[in-house]
Length: 436
Figure 1 (cartoon, helix red, strand yellow):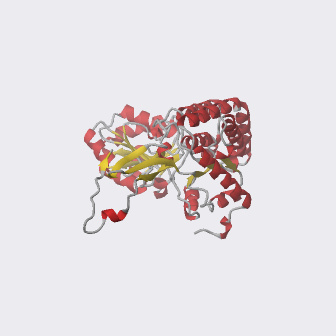
Figure 2 (cartoon, rainbow, N blue to C red; figure 1 turned 90 degrees about the vertical axis):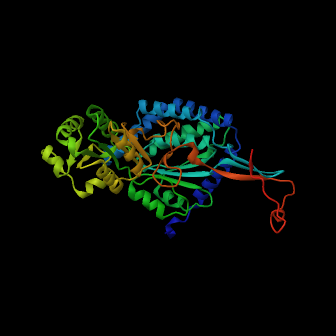
Figure 3 (tube, rainbow, N blue to C red; figure 1 turned 180 degrees about the vertical axis):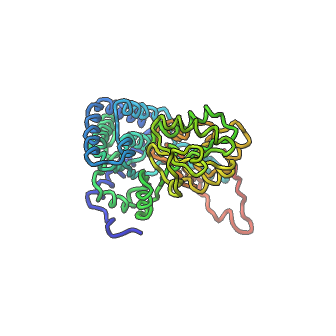
């Protein structure tokens, strides 16, 4: 329900109007013009790299004194390697096909009456996120490539990083001769609430944060919301799994970036191989500092680990903690995942193609993988260049949301004095409905 606290601040309304105007200008740019802007942004980010790293260091220092949660601290960190990788991602967006202006339907309704369905930008995106300053670069670049304006609202823990990044991005827009108001940054909590009330100017809200936060956004805005609340991902090790391969996948999916939403939070192991396999998996995971919590069967095999509670099966740890459960069959693993999973990304390790096919078909998730890490659930790794977020909703877009998720379409119909009356009544003329 929209509450009275969501009355937009006058200054924010003006900012949103400026963004909307800049978005309308950007929507008229050609693909080459937008690619030139992206190139200018990448160059500006490179030039500002020392300033950005220094700003991030301020945020990291403040996070240590404020006891920021460990997962959020990991997402907050933007070192030179991570920054260079993000800038590479910015440049890669220029190489992607432009979804705006794409004709997805071209049909003759009758002679001289021609219909087209054409991809167009959404308009203005409102992105609210916690900790991850690298998201600023991904989202801004995708917005520009798809002809959208964007209003960014980062968490206060990343205020210095986000400010430095947006400053560089706006400078890149200016250097390329574009309106810098296409990318805006909000910095206060009050602005977050006010942003949710700007349904006249903002066309889509994408929240990236905790389950509680996403649910709050969904309940307090009339603007369409795209995103995911939880990243509770699983790896199921089947009785026919290649154990060495499965172990490598488990370690990669948990340890590489434990605070990522595509990291596994629960490991399921087939009862038939549990006695031999669990010690191997546990040794590899514990060597990387992973705390294991197991059900009763798991603890019989691994007596030194903590007991898993019912709450553990539905918890996104975002940390080096992993719940472990022994299951009687692949069907039991599927049932567990469909009960406790968040419809994000799920994986099976097995050499049995029939079992893999059943798992891939029956598991309800945006991404279902066979013999590979859940960490591949990422727009850059999918070849989208970057992503604005991951959606677990059933309606498209689903999974990592790149350029195609940031456009809608319009129908254009061109005739020559055609009227509907011609096609109604006793002597109605028939439509040709011929695709061109």
